[in-house]
Amino acid sequence: MLDFEEKRRRMIERLREELGISDKVAKAMLKVPRHLFVPPPYDREAYLDTPLPIGKGQTISAPHMVAIMCDLLDLKEGEKVLEVGGGSGYHAAVVAEIVGRRGKVIAIERIPELAERAKRTLEYLGYDNVKIVVGDGTKGYEPEAPYDKIYVTASAPDIPKPLIDQLKPGGRMVIPIGRYEQYLYIVDKDERGRISRRVWGPVRFVPLIGEYGFKEPI
Ligand code: SAM
Figure (cartoon, rainbow, N blue to C red):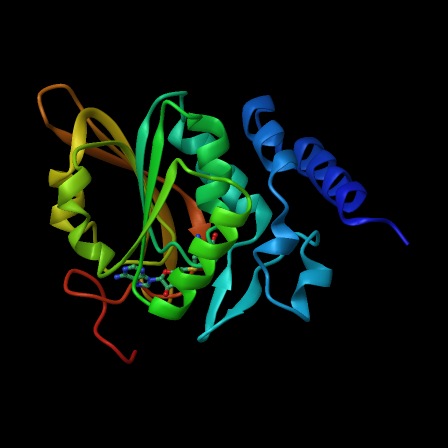
């Protein structure tokens, strides 16, 4: 039986070979124990490259999607990042490894029970550069705005306007858009505040529910 650490190392090696993920992202993912973010009994499957249930009908994203989104965001040390859809806290921990202690991750989650569990896991692991907030992330999080980077881990009907407003000039957002057919978009704001967007490819996420998202239930 391989231990969790060895399974993690092998999974990330495969992601490197198959996707060509950057050294920076691979190094961060090697440090984060995904099995501690997945409640039992699914923690045993934490090093399979697949989404897994985290309770309340939600999932932790597949590791390849976390890696791809981190690379698309082109994260740098010291950046302030907003995550919409904090879920288990795993993706936030990976981003926190990359932005480091001079940086900060604010992760908003609409389901209080998930946010509470994510907070406990992150505290236990000593991530003091991650702040978990309970709320409707389609409205962003004004008290910490503006952000160098924003990423959304649930699929939206369109780019929520508050997220565009809270992105710094020169900043980037990565967001899935669509209901049944979804595409991941890279959204850039230039120094003059102009927005451009391009499609990365098809994806599958849970719906983003909120004022600038889908209405519940869908
Ligand atoms: N990034 C998470 C992780 O590492 O575990 C996985 C996120 S899961 C795919 C998407 C999350 O978005 C769910 O936990 C869901 O409750 C949350 N969500 C949906 N709509 C939201 C909203 N308007 N604001 C904040 N969170 C939302």
